[in-house]
Image (cartoon, rainbow, N blue to C red):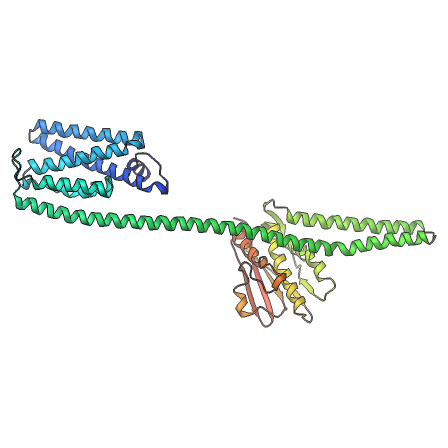
Length: 437
């Protein structure tokens, strides 16, 4: 109902924010025509009851004119200006007719005070001033003109014009303030749209940079993961060639053992690539998965970085339970947290470095806690670690890992990562819903 009423007042046209002025004129034009139609219909009924058929017929003709004007406004936007001229002339003529022919006691002059509202919204300010001055002049001479006997005294006319002038000034300043407010709102709206577009663009850049950073880390992990197996392959091939060059005979069992070792290593390398390929596959489909397997896969990704160091990653796989989740996104979050913990443990040269992962099942979600003893996070940094580009690693850090992890948890899982740091220990808490809504 409200929508249909709004469409009527805009003559069925759609307007953008840039065409607000035209939309406003259409609305005021339709409101003006509606009000004048109510007025003339009231006059038709009143004059019919008073047996003044000629005047009733004249006012009914004015009502039909209003119907035609409404049809023109619905037909084409270009009729707005001609209709504004016709309606202004009609309103002016009606007001003058009421002043010139009616008795003050009939109170028909009250329509005079709607005039400033109609004119200021129908016309621009310059033309509206001309029309108001014209009306004031015509009302002012009404007691003196010899053609129609006016029943208004000069004092009554002066009182009417004084009230008209005051109402015109009030309406003008209200109209002016509304225009200023509209310009400010429109300017702020454009500024806000620009800021939103800028933030969206920055978010896309951050997402790309985060993916690149994660890609770099993953390539580094693949390199670590492959280095030892490739060395084993090289060593076995070298062993075979050295014995062949020295003319030493190798038994069939020794050759089979070398080939089996190389074959197993190649299978391992292939499995490693499959794991990473699955991680990077952005199918965005949720799947039921044992949360323990997902955590173990994440831990396996970090093993090349922990080999050669004393870092221990402890995770108690006490029982299985499944959740419906985005596996790759959750792995990325956990991997970022684990990599940060490993970086801190290595950089701070912690004795007995350790990362512990605890899993707690609740009614509607799963809580994953990641503890490390890397010395904790400084108080002044703990509130900033999830901000983009904030990093304590200097040139070696992008400052995007934890930021993107937080964004993933908020946007994909409707939760957030919490962090607590005290007694040289840091605890990251990740809450994952069992079912994605």
